[in-house]
Length: 275
Image (cartoon, rainbow, N blue to C red; front, top):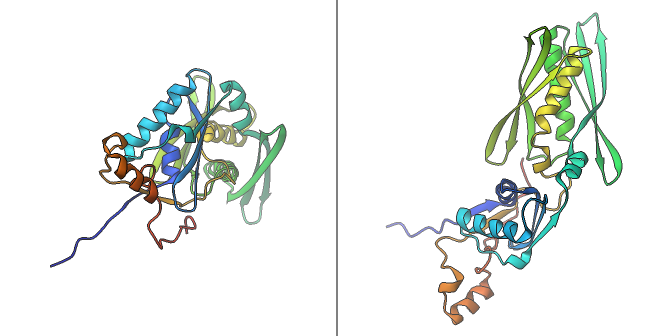
């Protein structure tokens, strides 16, 4: 007869941040955990539309409902800013586009340079992509180079991909449509960007790709953020609510760390992120 196997549910820091980022009013989220996998701090950046008490209540309720995690409200800190100011500091803009062609090989290299403002300074990100010298290939390469540069701004387990590029006509204007996929831990999301061709198609393609990327950029963890990718956190299974415990049981639970978020299983090695 087989013995009982203790299978412990786990949730990553990224999954928690992704859930909390979907709550009304929340713009950015940072979850800090200790070496045992317990939540030390939750930092959120919000607009001015909802009170901090409402935000904290939503966070505690979401964690409890989704993973049965009970968190002390004192571990949640809320900073409020005007949303318009936040968008300016997060959005990427197209700063440069360069095309180098080789007539002998019929190959083209397209380089894209993006910029954004961080702490009152301008930071640039560049990437390039090669393609055959025909319109469809070069439009696709421009979108891919733009997305590659955008991926340099976020944690590597979150990334954008180019699904398709289409050039179409609306009345007497040419429009570029770029379908971008956003890959996050356990989730795939499609984003659509569009731009009118004002000067030339490659520049419009880069702007269309940025239109898609900027829709979700502010909710993604920037490169070098506080949490370590791949950190796994145990989720309590059918854990009694704190008010249902007797005083002696509460003390025991506090000692083994189960009144809040459970720590990593003993001797469990911390993941180093995606391979």
